[in-house]
Image (cartoon, rainbow, N blue to C red):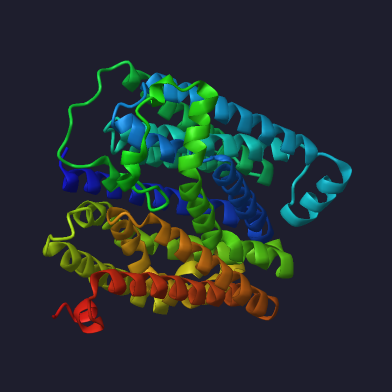
Length: 451
């Protein structure tokens, strides 16, 4: 499959996924109200965070050895399933712990949980965890688009279930979380079935395009493939698990940091102002993050071009053009949205969410400012500098934490939006400085495309 064709299919699937997710958020928001929407958004965020924390880099680390046939795919999958089973057991233990008197009271007050809802959150986290592992295994087999397509299908199935509950008047907070959990597990099982069928087939023919062009910005650089031991296939299953943990931890830290970058402000907002204001703010967040689809579509192509040899004269110029294009596209959509934010969100979400428009206007400058960072994440992977993405994500989280503590108590959702905007701008600035250092490109050359 050609690179551009695969990239177009991935973009199409991602657009469908985000639109379906946004529709789910709007239906839940209008049905449950700001407080219910806040509880729902926080519960989803918690499930995703637990999956990121417990993933262990099992999928990330497996790509290079699977791609190079250093270990049989079936054996790697066994090791991954052992790890995932242990993490599922841990999730169930945490869910059981959440039913205790003291934690149950805190969770009921902060997240609106009732008895047993922790088990639904654990099921949702299981779906996320397994989906990520199986998606990376399929990437190693050359199935580049499968993950995006299944993700899109999972999102639309989730939307249909939510609409069915909404139209019958039976959509509650608990059922919203339950449907969410069912959708995630269904997506995971679909990926597992596809993976098992793929393993039974002969490996794909070698391609001229490297698999690393489609590894997410939280992945590990393929430049470390030469460190793979030749006797990997002779390791015991515990030894294979340990190998994956050692190689995958950096990428997993980046995944956790990137998630916190996107959702830490909601946690702070709940702590200082309550779940209702999280519900108002979450509408702005989902709308704003859709803009990152535009620069994000350039990432796979840029990973490929930036992986060229340093002597390639087009490498740096291509990356600079991608940065300019990412900024241009995001600004072109973000500027009119800035003026239309308040009436648009009031129309879509209702009068209860009038404050979402003001929050979105405060969030948009940061969304645009971070567009270069979204693009450069792919460039750094191609250059073998994936750890720069981790460093930038950690810095952005720290800035967001400090600014959130300063702004959220007094200004609520708008303060959360400004704290995120400032953090995004700082993270993107660091990535641009890194880019200029490694390319020795002048600011004039980067911005205007001139020598």
